[in-house]
Image (tube, rainbow, N blue to C red; front, side, top):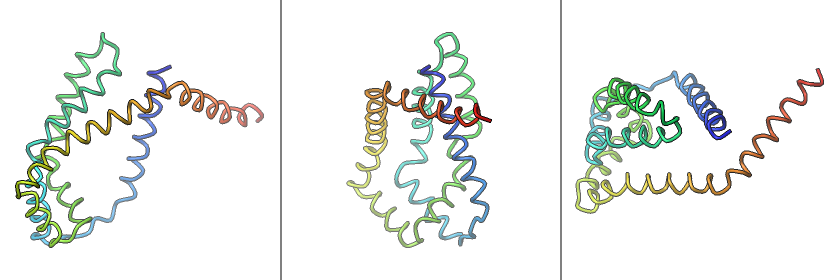
Length: 167
């Protein structure tokens, strides 16, 4: 049930993201200086150097849901896939646009200036650790109440099936 529930949740997340991607077809044009400011901000935060570590941790964490007999193959395939499609060099230009859409050029320059200070560098190094701890906290909250969540899902799925049974 645990693997089936995780697959259902993962599938739901994929469909949510896929729907959002289709809806975001209008990409605004940004001045080159605005995109450069976004890139400088990302570099100041260390995203360019932390990119691989974050993805490796995500793959490693997700592998715990894979049966032991398939885990090594899963890690090999996911690592190869991530190295091909989820690197700083591959996604940098798209990341620049994401940040340029959320911040003005001046704001990005101010953020980059902050992240180049000693406090900004400390914040940058602590952020991945804090995010990981926050994710673990969320996972633990779900795990602590997993039976309740599973019952809620089971009830919801049964309710979904009930109208179909009447037809």
